[in-house]
Length: 316
Image (cartoon, rainbow, N blue to C red; front, side, top):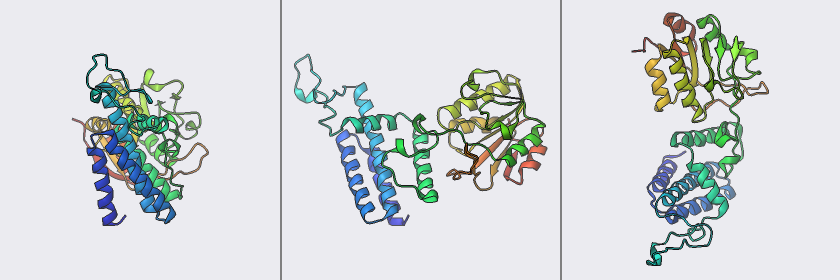
């Protein structure tokens, strides 16, 4: 992306974030869609990606403003202004979705986009851009159709860790007693004494022993699994553990894990996870981190140094 494109993209993002009315955001959304169509016709792929992302941001902002209005003055349903029993000036009546130029399909998308956290939304956009660039995917105009892992509950959370990293964890832990976020297929590599599937729901089970955890990366599951791990460690049920996540250092769950970890390995490069059909998938848009909780920091540092930069002795 050129400096000029970055500037225009950032300006558009700021305009969306600063917008205070549905009408204002709808105008930005419509202009970005017109630009996307132009870019597609001109075969300017980068501009098409940027324009489609501005559209997504605008639609999410529409959802946020719709929710704000619903909680305050209210937003009347299609075509029928909400009656004001007091007989006050009609100007005080909330506008309808139709009056705001929001049809049912757009309203539905906007609500779903607004329902996820800002961090996850940024991750979804970044993963989408990565997939378009690395896999030459078509540029979709609906994030629900983008095929992003863990997106809005429609994607696939089953990405498996390559064997070399699992074996490094096994060498440090001695063995793996429990894998609390797993599947039958993943156990071909992990080979834990016990494991919990999504159906069993490891968040509701007791954990113990030496634990390997590669949690689902979608929110709120990743934060829930991080909290569960720390609770089990604090309670003395888990005596050693290695947790693999993306390196979202600014998130609350990452900060919590980092504060209690005895060591962390920040990977050199990005891990190419494995899909359920045993094929490598496109690497994530950021690197990964292995958190170690346990007494053998020296062993962890030695075994994981080949995978990245290790910080030890972190727990306070």
